[in-house]
Every structure is written in C-alpha cells, then in structure tokens.
Image (cartoon, rainbow, N blue to C red):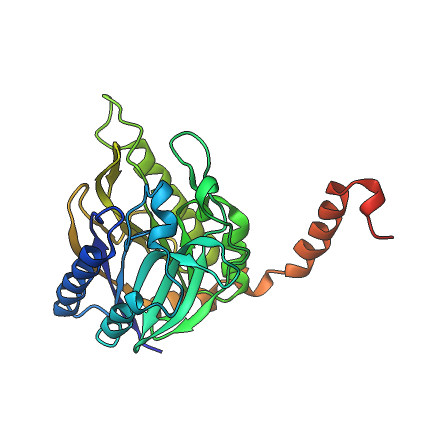
Length: 293
C-alpha cells in the first residue's frame, strides 16, 4: 500500500446542459492536476452537465457505454478521476450519478440515494433514487463515493465503514448559504466541515468534499472544497471560495493505518446489532396484515 495519496480538488463552474465544453474543462483540469503530481482528480456533482437541469435532464442523459463518456475513460489513463453526470439506467430511469474511472475504464458508479426535494431543490421531480452505497477497490485505496445529500444520512457513513472504506469522496453542488454580518464564514460551509470532521473521526478515514463554484439559475455555488484526516480538528486544505481551479493536498495513509491499528472501534463494530434492530423497526413500519410471522 502506498504511504501517501495526493488528491487534486478540481473546482469549476459547468456549462448548464452542454456536455462538450464541460469535457474540454475536464481535459484542462486533468492537465493541471497531473502537472502537480496528483494521484487522483476529484470533480463536483453533475460536473458534466451542470446542476439545475430540470427539463434538460433527459436530453443530457448517458448510459454507461455512451460515446460521450469515452473521452473520460481516455483521460483516466493519465489520472484516475471522478465525474458526475446524468445516467440513463438499463431500467430507463434517470439517475444523478457519480463515476470513478481509472486505467481507461469505469470502475464504480454511485447513484445518488437521497434526492433533496425541498426549498430550492427539485431533484425528486427529475431523478430516480439509487438503492445502495458500496465501497470499491481502486488504485487509490478502498473508497466510497457519496453524492451531496447522501452524507446527511448517517446510515450511509455506517455502510462505508462496514464496506472497509479508507476514504470517502463527497461530490456536491452545494449552494452557499447562511451569510451573517457577525462572521465572514458561510453557515453552510461550517456545516460541511462539521460533517467531514465527525465522520473522519468515527470511521478513521480521510474525507474529501469537492464542491462546484459559479452561479446557475440564480443559485450561488460557493466552492470551498476541503479534506480532513482522521481526528483532525482543522482541514488539511481548503480550496478558495468562488474560484475555479486545482487545489492539491497529500493524505498520510501510513499514519492513518497506524491510527486504525491502534484504535479498536473498527474491530469492535458489530453489524449484527444494527441488523437485528433494523429488521424489527422495518417490520413495525408495515401495516399489521403485511408483517411476516
């Protein structure tokens, strides 16, 4: 296992509803990231299409073998990378998807499980829900990808832990909110940092949040992508607010491995306790006539 891993956080503002210019921007980001010696490039949610698609969702949807994704696969021969896009599943449904490519192939695809449909968010109107969170092996270790709202549901973090993840990649298109005259820090930024810090401690893994920038359909996306190491009070790095570009940081995997070996919380985790209780809770939610004996 490598002792260090260098992440490149690629903040940018996708062109809404147009794939070609966003592929061109991805090419530039790979060039920039590779020049820094990074081991992987992380990009935001729906980076291939923009976020507020609404009626454009079906027009930009791609299946996993679409020719429009072939350039992404080719770029991954230079550098492993993540990219968000609209996936048209074999079931005909449309998904807010996040892919991980390396060595010229799509290694893993995560379909967003929790679709925010409240306030300014309308995802439940246009996307189908994913139904799983899975860890996968990669050149950068055993990883889990979550998509924005997914991280606000602690059960997903538990599944990452049970799957043996050593790193969580959180791809998002998170608006900047919570401006206050009393502090220059966005309230939304503080919330994301709290989540990353907490799950880094609980799961003893590095956590990386890659957020987009720019304005789209009146929504302000703030950037500020960041990475935390386990038990760190402060981020290893924080990308600039508002600015597009590459920010790199190196994670000490050897130190993380030592921390995991010295700490018993991962060894002591007993999924059987959760399974037994979940079965009871799920049964209680069914109408009485539908419960199994």
